[in-house]
Image (cartoon, rainbow, N blue to C red):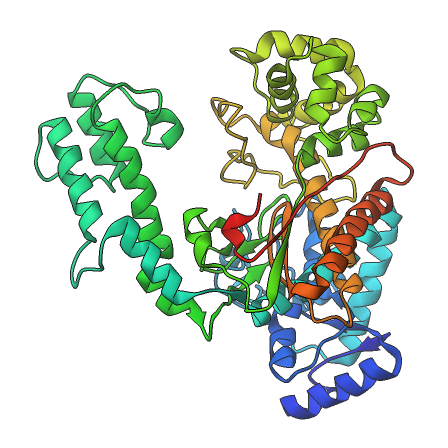
Amino acid sequence: MADLSADAAPRHVGDLARAIADREAADGPRWIWAATADLYPALLRAGVRVARCHDLELTEALLLGHAGRWGEPRAPAAAWARAHGLPVPADPLRPGAEPPGFAQAALFESVPAPALGLRELIEVYGEQQRRVEKTEHPGRFRMLVAAESAGALIAAEMGHTGLPWRADVHDQLLRELLGPPQPVGPPRRLAELTAEINDAFGVRGLHPDSPAEVVRAFARAGVDVPNTRAWVLRHVEHPAVAPLLEFKELYRIWTAHGWTWCDAWVSDGRFRPEYVPGGVVSGRWATRGGGALQVPKVVRRAVMADPGWRFVVADAGQLEPRVLAAVSGDARLARAAAEGDLYAALATDSFDGDRAKAKIALLGAMYGQTGGDAIPALAVLRRHYPVAFDYVEAAARTGEAGGLVRSWLGRTCPPSSSALRDAGLDPPDEVAPPPGRARGRFTRNFVIQATAAEWALVLLATLRVALEGSAAELVLFVHDEVVVHCPAEQAEQVVAAVHESAATAGRLLFGATTVRFPLDVSVVGAYADAK
């Protein structure tokens, strides 16, 4: 094990990189450093990669959350100050890095941060190890810390490598969708749709990109809508709905992934976002700009493998229901999760073969849907799978009482109530968003989605090791999906490695379980062609 600090390491980046490369070649240590995001990108630019690290900042965030102190400063300087009973300084500003609801600056900004040397970093590391041992399941928490640190390395590597992106293809598809770019104002198709929407409302000067204006326009037409979300508008009968839905989709593409975006984010044929591991409260990743986790399907046509290379795109279908089967210990649900199609197995077992009803029931239980078609389906689920049903119900009751819930490995939910979408816990289209902001609905899904994020992160870390020594490169990770860019002749080996990594992740997290975690894997030349 090796420690790295500003005092102990050579000041020149080149000297530092050579020193780390030499040590990596000698014994492959686990590096202890303050924050991977601050140090590793410079090493990558110098041509140096490391196998393992312990990220003090990410570990501190996990430990603070476990203690119910979610959102407090997590930099090593803050951890060291807390351990010594000193005033706690704010974290160094890293734009966009703060998790949702993070408001530590106002409380801690007046305290200067101490400069930590090698001895202090070792002290922080030792204190973290002691705190990990005091958690409810130390072995699981150690795995969480290791996976989070490995994820930080992978995030930096993917940002350095970049996702292959054809700017010429991107420009062509934008012109097909929007028309040519205009010197001033929106492109032609958006202008046409704006005119159609105004005509449908019988007005002039309405801006379709303004939700408030659109809501007022519907009100004047005698239609009451709470907002302009697509799922709300699809239930409205009005001539403005169709052009408005098209406008919303195209406007989002123009502003989030249009020509300006391409100029800013794509260079030398690669899109290089900056990922933020654990940037969402459930442990899912976020990004600092670039929208790498929300690339529209139509725009994916520009993501094309290099000549002679292929993308291996692996997606974990039905992941969250399978996680519920594993963590709850419900033997009957686990038997269904041993099949390739969990919903079909569930339907055959308990829902008279009705796969759609089985899916609604299981998703409804995880997301707290209690009305409509879900009512009879949930009654069947409660009767036939009581252990799984009670698992999420218990999490909901704990949240409603103001308590904290944890993922399988120990990630802890924040204490404050949040809307599902504000927290990154998005219910799928099959389940209507529940009313209100009841904390129980948040904690109900947190225990499942956070554990699913852990499984995906362990898969990613395992796959990284499996790909060492090959030309294959991890280029994209979106929640339950991983994309590998590799020479065409290596695609078969990469597919095998992805499947084995998924199975390994299941064993590492849940031990001997009948639950399977199958992947849908495609080998394609263009990302848009993946299943």
